Image (cartoon, rainbow, N blue to C red; front, side, top):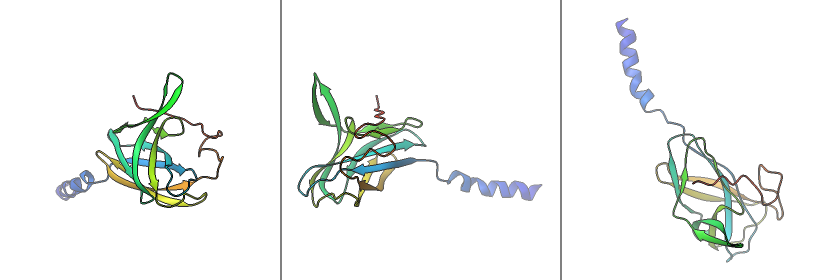
Length: 157
């Protein structure tokens, strides 16, 4: 009995250090764009851990990247930069056309249909997570939907 208790006490630190569920990034895609233009990245974020916030993005494909939101300002569509997006467990967020997205300013090379490129997302708690974006064919449907340019735009707030 005593050896069983000792064994359990020795296992406690290993259990405490086990990785908790965290952030998952899925359906990362972009559109074809020429070098020097402004590109875009869309994706889905699923939080399986504690509440967090997406605070930034970067890619070696662009001089800079920003989180943006498309808004309807009295019938005129506009975009504005946002500092962060809250990410909560069981509330997936989809960055999609017409909603939140990542702008890639100053593309260093063309985004060609079928190509992939790295995108690093920075989270307040989870830190940086690098994923690969796929450049979709012109006019292609958004991954996971049946409609081009449409999707589940679960926006925080």
